[in-house]
Length: 293
Image 1: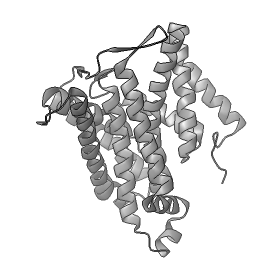
Image 2 (image 1 turned 180 degrees about the vertical axis):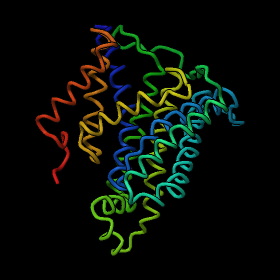
Image 3 (image 1 turned 90 degrees about the vertical axis):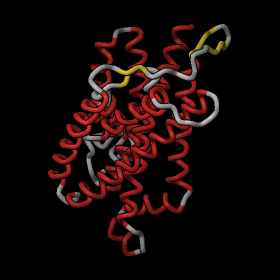
Image 4 (image 1 turned 30 degrees about the vertical axis):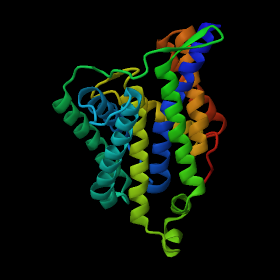
């Protein structure tokens, strides 16, 4: 029973981490119509950000380690989000009408950010000290505080995204642009501003995922490769551009990976994940909540 619950908690944590990345991919694809292969590198920068601002150079603010950790995450999310805005403004916006060029540019950004991180931080894995080192006992079963904290923080970010998209004026503009760029522009929506907001939120969510996983795993310049691959699987599985589909797909993939890894083996986990993806696409080529043309 203890192993079952531990596996379930790990599955929820992995699922939420993947959802944070996949949600950003959905936003960029649905609004900017760009397949951002560099999304994993923004996740990687999130990991290095929390390592830098919490572990190496703590913010000069009085408070508990948990508070400093949360503030480090917020600062990292903001800075990576701003970097995403600059990438969109000076690279993607100039070439976004040509999908081939955007793909090539995104791949170029992958190598630029990886090389920059390699030169700046080195190639060795970095361990981030966790502010949550205790255990929580539930019915005789012990769960680590850092994993529970990661789950809570990830839920807060996802709920914040849901509130932004569904209940704010900006969210209405985002949904309008996603449905029809030209019609939204005729109605007075500033398309360029919406593109910038989209990239800020997208890259910020990826950075949040990396920052939350940093204390649990290791941080290195190549840590974004595997998560972004899983995120692409989730986006395709849930339906390209569908945020609810990304949430559903994220839990399917995260739980599958966790349980298969625990009870069968890590080497079979990705095989099962891709078999699920292929099976769903054979039945519904547009994904679980995807719409046909």
